[in-house]
Structures are given as structure tokens and as C-alpha cells.
Length: 420
Image (cartoon, rainbow, N blue to C red; front, top):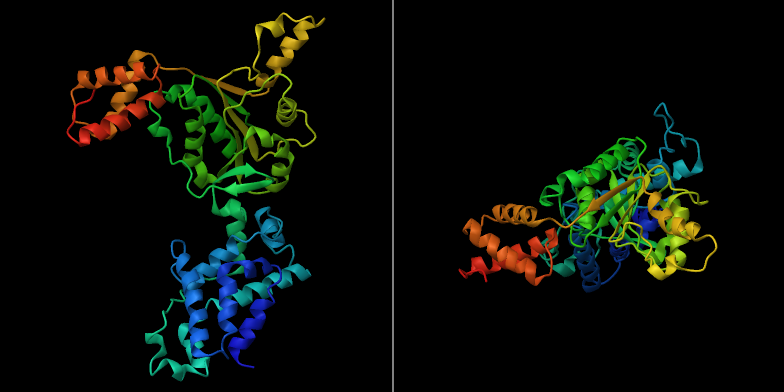
């Protein structure tokens, strides 16, 4: 049996890493290896498909070995999960599974992946019996790839997972929960803390809490409340961008999916990463079943919050529950208990920070800082007058209003127009 036929058999026999065969890269490679007895046009078509798939990996991989390594380290299987949780090695660094059948299968799979990563275009052409159908130089017609030199070793794979987790949580930093899945967000908002002018002291308790969390110290759930457009959500997103290289991840959990919190816990528990479960724009109406669900999540529920997760929520209402005066004047015997119930949820956030709309001077300070970043050439007083007119038209001053004004001003000034 020729080496390429054996390579195809070995690749088809991937076991622990069997999921790789469902990816386009490996399925197209198997198709190409299976085309050695096909006519030149069929062989060339499968060659082209494989190269096309490989080229789409180019943003993350410069060679075949890079692409295969990336697929391997981002695979989610029983071994990568154990490696991420530190269960693949003992405390002395020796392999915990060295004698098990799963570990033997992992070694065999990695040996196969190393062999496949050395596959060159020349090897395929030399083994193709009908290469004369391409003329004297087949590789002048067919696109060629680089093999590269990325090593796929057991030790390197284990180190990667112990540092970065496994699966999609190793590849991406931001997720949103939808219908039972944490869906990756490939291009999250790139806002940074230094871009959020005017609220440095206000947000510092949230920053300090996050740093303590990343350092392994006890930390609290956070409630960011206050006026609209003051940067509550942007602060949470900026924390992710600031500290994702330290293993911080963010999972946005929309209110309708609060009941899926136990499932999220099961997915992330044991991973060597730190997660912020982000609930944006949180508020409840009386009788909302999600109210009780969140109370259980924050404290006292069966599915307790794991040590590697915190809940950060934003809201325009400090007490979260939409109350009416008629509710406080109801005919309940224990009215005080009803009022306490409406306040109890916010009390379960250990850190509560108020983001209030800026006064006139602070609003101008934010505008000037943003204008300076963009190198505006405009009179100081003229900028303030235009910014104030914009705020009045928007019915209030806020950092969001300032950003929107700067976008408007930049477009006008770039065209040589005056600000209205």
C-alpha cells in the first residue's frame, strides 16, 4: 500500500479528535487523498477545493501545519477538556492518563496529525499515476501550499489548553447565549477603558473587583445602574478588551435565557478561564418569572455560581423591579415584606455603582477629550456651543450624546463645513 493511501486510512481513523473530520479542511483533504485514481479533471477539482479551504484559513495560518495545529488546539473533545481542567497531568507534571486507552488514542491521533501536516504538493503529484495529463509540469497548473514547521506535540497541546481552555472558549473572547448555546462573537466591540472619558473614578470599584477576580481573590457580582447613555455597558465591554489576555471571557445572557444559567455553569466550570456573565439592560415587571430565576442564580440556587464566573448587570433602575405607587398602597397585610422583596434582588450584588448623567462642565470635558483624540481644528467656544445645541436637541447630556456629536462634527469639519 502506498504512503498516501495509508495516510488516508490513518486520517479516517482519528478517534479522540474525530470531530476534526467534520471540518471543511479535513473533509476536503480526505477527498483529495481519495482522488488518486480519478481522472485529471476530477483530481484537479478536488485539489482546488482543498486549496480554497486552506486559503480561507490564511488569516490564522500561514501553512498547512499551522492550519492543522489550529484545528487541533481549538477542538473540543474529552481530552482537551481534561487538559484545560488540569486533569491530563498530575501535580508533578507526569501524564495522569499515560496508561489509559484514551491517552493512547490521543498519542495516535497526534502522530497522524503530525504526519498529515508534512504533506507537500510534490508528494501528491509524484504519487498520482496520471500526472502526464497535466503536461510536463503539473505544479505550474495547480496552486501550491507551504507545509510550514509548526510542531504538534502532546506537551505543547496540554500547555495550550491549561493556559487557554478549549474549544470555542479558547478561540474567542465574547459570546452571546441563544437557544442553549454560547454563540461566539468574532468581532466584539473594541471599546477600551481609556476611551471612556469622565467616569474614571466612578468605574474604579468595578475595575478593582475585576482585577481581584482575575488574581484569584474573592470578588462580587456587580450592578451598574443609572442614566441612559452613561457608559454602563461600554464599561463591561471595555473590561473584556482590557483583560482578555489574562483569560477573561464574556458571555452575554439576555433576560429571556436566564433559566439557562445552570447549563452555562456546566459548560464553564473547571475551565482555566474567568467569565463575566453579562446581563444588559436588566429590569422586571411584577410577576416576571425571570425575577425569581435571577435571585436564585445570584444567591441560594441549587446551580450555584462557579468560582470562575461573576455576574455583571446593567440597568436604568437601581432596584430592578418596575414598581408603581399603587403597588405600595395595596391591601396586602404585610406590605413591608412586599417592599423588601422588590429591593432584595439589587442587594445581592456586592458592588453597586451609579452612572449618572454629567453636568454641563463634565459634558464639555468629554467633548473636548474626544475632539482632541481626533485632532479637531476648531475654536474652543464654538465647539462647546455646537455641543450644547446638540445636547438640547437630544434632550440631555451624556457620554453617548457626546460621542454622537463628535461623529456629526467630524463629518462636517472634514468637508470644510461649519457646525450648526
